[in-house]
Amino acid sequence: MSDQNRNSDSNNHSDFRLPGAVSRPYRQARLITTLAFSYSGILNPSLKECHLHAPWGHIFEDLIDDLGLETFIVAQHSFSPFDRVSIQDWYKKKQEKKKEIRRIEQERNANRLGKPLPVKVAEPPVPTPAVPQFSTSQALNAGTDADDQDIDLLAETSFRTLADERSEEKVPDFSIFKGLKFRNRVTNAIMTPADFPNDPADWDIVRVVVAKAMLLAELKPPPSRHIESEVAFHTALGKIMVKANLQAWRQAERACAADEKLQSLVLVACVGEWWTWRLANRREVIPPEDTQPESTSNILPSDPRVELPEAASQRQSRRRNAAAPAQPSSTPEVGIRPQPRVAKEKAKGKYAQPPEDEPDDDDDKVPYDRGSRKGKEPEDELPPTLAPRRVFKTAQAGYSDQAEANIVDAIPPHTNWSDFLRLSTPASNQAWYLVHYFLQHGQVPGVELPSNDSGPVPGPSNASRKRSAEPTPVVGGRKSHSKKLKLDSVGVEVREEEDYASEGVMTDREERG
Image 1 (cartoon, one colour):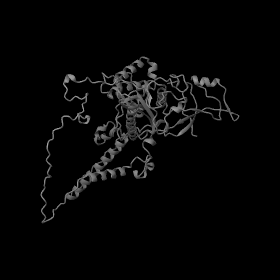
Image 2 (cartoon, rainbow, N blue to C red):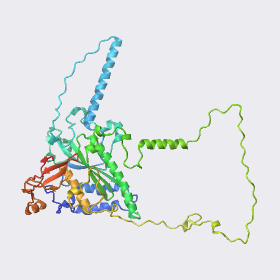
Image 3 (cartoon, one colour):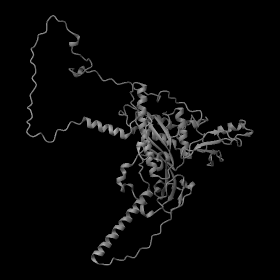
Image 4 (spheres, one colour):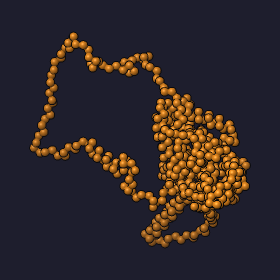
């Protein structure tokens, strides 16, 4: 997107629209159709999750509409707990171990039979292409070019050969990937999307060498469509959203374990038409070993009502021991005959006729439930009643769908998820702008702060033209210069000077504060 404010005229981007909906307006009606299909009581009576793939797949397609040919969506992508280079190292060690065992067996047989070992002439090594060296700018948080390393060893090895690790795979509902390096399988030359063949039938000459996960999304079905109170809806939505957040976080752990160069990505949790998002970096997802606690006994819960795992296990053990029946003695006493059991005699009574003059007591009457089905004929049953269909448009008490005045205030706090967002509200539009900006630039946008440098920064956007017409503020006898405050891949605040190219795209010139 050449102009970052192409879809929004406001400074806080509360009216941002997805690029696909801007370029193809008919897709807005298609999104409404898919949402109505997902919430339909006739077509989706059980309110299943699979129906939500229609609207959310539509949304993610519109999100990456202008992000280039190298950005694509994968549904149900399996993240294995290892990358390709790790498999190659494991395979090498396994082959070397087999060769060592075979050599020892040959020596043992030769010593036992007294025969000399056969001498084999070593074959000349097969030349292989060298591993390309990546600079920091070329790597771009990507994994190692594993296909160029030992191309004849595991170039086409399937992950199914290691079936013992498949149980640990995590499958997000949607993943957005960005291809960072392509090669021609025939010439082994570097390719760009512009060099791709025109005929899709020739796709096999393109080899994706490096691809990076940019976004992971987890979908969950919404609460019941017939919840009677708004409070019950808030409770149900919160429980489902927490489950989606936890699963998305586990998928991020697996993605970082599969790609050792992955530093940051966006996590999205979707529950029906509601969603929430956050930024995740590698230090949070996989903390360094020196920062991990050795045992849980050193970590005290913040809430005194929360039990430690050791205390909970001890309490459960004491409860089981108390509930267990007493064990009888293994050997009875010798010479002592146990007393025979004597049944307790019951007192015999006589039937007394109730007096005729005594009035009926209300306590002696049998209760009768009019709504009970006991003793009724099938035609006497009342027809089942269904609560009316309700669509709640607030997520929690004090919920507001209004956007923040400053775009940076809409970024979720560090290590936290955003508030619950409803599609097409100003707050949701603002969040989609931030997610789209991250997919395009690999970082979140910043906020302008006054500084003691030169004047305003030129740019083609409406906001830049408006700032250029205003007088430049003077602080301490010097003109103020606008700077960008952004978050790098590890969540550290970095000041970045605004530097626009001819088309208004900001370059990556940073200076750490």
